Length: 386
Length: 143
Image (cartoon, rainbow over all chains, first blue to last red; front, side, top):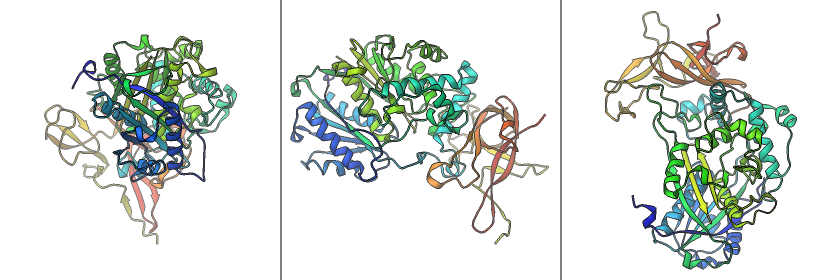
């Protein structure tokens, strides 16, 4: 592999998000095309500037990105659709990044969009007998891992609830989030049981929506906004022996993975970027279920195993804390249109690094990290800097 | 209607060929590295040491519950046709293999991490012809 030091630096020159929620009368191409209009406006570019497009989605079927781009203009550029479960958006971003870094193109669009099916997600990343056994209940897959995490660390259900409370508090400051209202411990612990020990408010809500970013070389930047560049963009897709029930893998008792995919993707990203977790000012992690934020923070190297619940309680992960996590409310507040989530995480970091995050602004944020897990399994880490 | 045949959810997950007729899960064991797999890998390929070195083995009927969750709502996609609520999780067997499994319980409160559970073959649902579709499950062993 070519070292990043030999590749061209890439700028995130535009971001665009739609307001996420349920839109029964609209389709994914409606959200997708709206996100493209917004990203072009933010980047101060025209559609004819875009030389290629990578479009992330999971449930939208054949040619989903083309359907959105048809609403903007068919200009003969290559459009590639990316399905990589919940890492689809960040995988589309990574492909767009690579083509600009490698000087194949100068200006590339990464789009993520989804109109979600209603009810629990019908994940099909399993064998037919596993599906017939009911093993595709992602809330229960996370619940099993939460049970093991509780056994290992002593974490409690109240600790998980504090993740929801923090993120919903942050989400109240995010005009693009599906839920913009804080919740109390009583509301979280009083919500209905979904998969023991996890309750409804420990699960991220679903949502329809889209997000887009434009990546380009320095010489193609048109806006005068603060320049945010990509320090690392890594994808790791499964290691032998690691348990990811959501991706259909169980722990190997004899040969457990020496390093899990979240740790591995973070390690690679830190090596490429040239600094570790201690250098990161603001973080977007994958809170698809409340407990997953805790072990995600630990796996990414921000603290040791079992420390995240304590630090959360102390306020370390608050917007004004030492390591602000999920400043835009995370999946818990935004909702989770599978293909769009990775892009929204990146949009929030860009807003933070530009100093445009308003009431959510982390003072002096210079370097930010996003982490998107996905069935498969997949783990994708992006580091951005100013 | 109602001829009461028992149909396995999937052929080849378990065997009743043991001496006393009790069911045993069928897995694979690698002759090179010793890793176990369940279900058995049809291609005979060890995905750990990456050799074509697997042979079929029957697995222990008893293990320890490593984790479980009681699912309170219908799984998405319409693939699962069993009762709700239901529980599934992981059981660790003494030969050093973890099995993802449904649990069979009279009360969900019988489930406890670290406790023993044994293999049973039980109904998951009845099909349109009245046959019982059965699959492997682990049942907590009451002390």
